[in-house]
Length: 326
Figure (cartoon, rainbow, N blue to C red):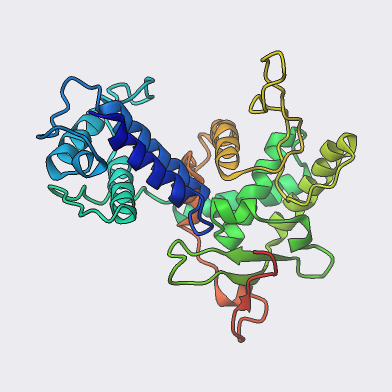
């Protein structure tokens, strides 16, 4: 396989990634597929059916069938996975197919797949009794809040999701100014970003918070302030890190410069923070009557929540447009 074929694919991917309508998550996925297409050329079991000289050969029907088979079987992985056998999930296979479709469209090439990977079974959502227990737990902790910053943040996040059904990306976009705790009914302003962005525009909603969530957020704001005081910088994001991490840029001598606590949480960081702390919460509540352990993915909690019209401020009016700058 010549370098020209891979270079054409990578150039197409970078063109797409540079566009404003391509999300950061999609850009990572496109680069991931481009990297696998580079790796597959050196795999001894790759069977493209013809000499690969250009992108059209690499993205031909037989070449893609061979690539997807090797990818599904975990033959293109460069590090072990938690699943043990290394095989790809249905979700990962569908992401690959979606990216291939975008790449082929960018290169004006036809896409021929033997068959579409089936839709994955939706993960079970958090049931009603467990959600009720969570609300009761939040109300109890309002009287005697935890002391660990990570736990304080987790309770505030869970309460926010229970009240708003916010996606992870929507949570990360929240600013302190979106939260109004001054009135008799605390309100959170949230910008909804539907997944089908080309069909639905972002919409701003103002949602009345439950008492337990409001108290959890007050505790979090106080903790957040303590974290940010040493930094002496203005951070607008509502959710910030509670400890330094190693994801910083390398210094001149090669060692990693840690990011300090107080940095805005990004979607992957927020999900990891939730997963890490929810393990402790499950252990604490294990054995409680009717308790079912919380899932490690925040999405399963979000999908179980429905925001009723009576919780929306001005629900008898049209939704507010997205705030300026979003």
